[in-house]
Image (cartoon, rainbow, N blue to C red; front, side, top):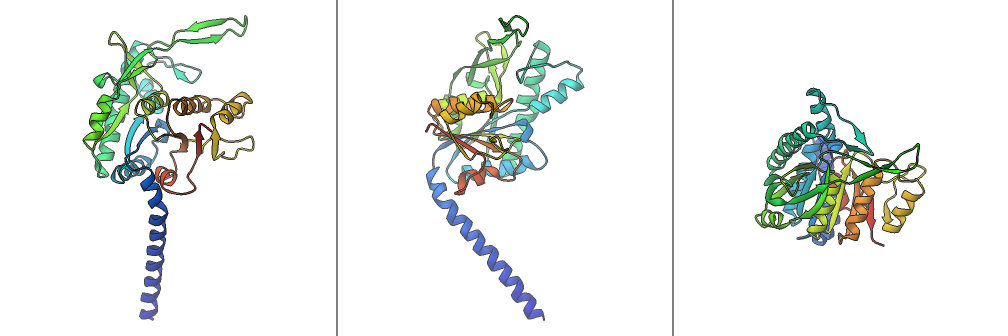
Length: 306
């Protein structure tokens, strides 16, 4: 009886080894494909749930160890909202962007450049990597301008300017600081805070910063981790691949709507700016970065020029 039990255990162990071997064989061509390529990963605040940060950190470290140069840009909308609520600072949104006054921008910078950034750096280091945290202010990495925004008055149909406060958009990316960090085998972790021409602090959408950084670094791929499966068709099924014209058509016919529009626009801008491909991924799936990069099937929605 004991011999039968031991034999069963050995068979199960051999099966696991064979499965591990198949996984490694499948991953090898992709590891070679991305060797010494830069991949920019946007890690959204909504994706930072449960043990997700541990899985994410392990994926980033493994990417680095296989020869990829990962660059992380993180968000933190839910965490900013929670802190503003604790401090009794009112917060409103227009078209998905947080109106950021002088009091709010101090909290935004504190949360993004402070607690979230250092939490991610610590997690990556704990997973065996070597990460360094910075914001767009460091080395003038992200020089920003105030976001110029308009909206249509529903009563008159006239366009009117909207003051978003200290909300910005990238005017210039200075990648030299990132090149220096990456040459030292260190992983940059960027908080999406920009600096204005007079030293102003600007809150910038993390998707926008990740796309601009990906273009400045001539990245092989931009990966946008969020809390949805990818781009859904009208039957609510994930669309595995889109070209830029197809993505624009889905925005025009309303298939892509709401908060997915700025993500797709970021992906389109990145691809048109020289990034080989952009991907929308569900950051809630354990080790989704490895599934996307190192398997034949990938995950989420891949967006390419054609």
